[in-house]
Length: 156
Image 1 (cartoon, one colour):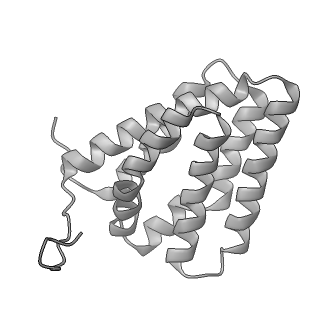
Image 2: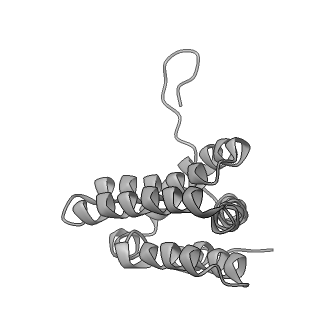
């Protein structure tokens, strides 16, 4: 961000900002997943196809830089929200995506690579196909599990 005189300001991330952003993200993406899982036949198939295409992009990026891999990961999650058809959900998700992106990068290279792995995200598409009763709980665990990698003092 720049101020009125063109100076760059870097927003710092504290534990509360990271935790809150991931909790909101978990709620949004759980809602997106439930919405997709309950779409009628062809609409659900279209959403799953879009997610499979996003997974292919992630797979193609596996040998690329971490930045490229992270952007493919972010696009997968954006696709999840977009495929829900809920424009407000997508807009709200976009508002926190920067914090999420920065948080993953600051977790360290090895942990960031684990978090953007294709196999981890293929589980999401499998959940959507199965549409289990505990879909939201499992999606929340998928998102919030990343917080363990940040090694932050997350005080209540």
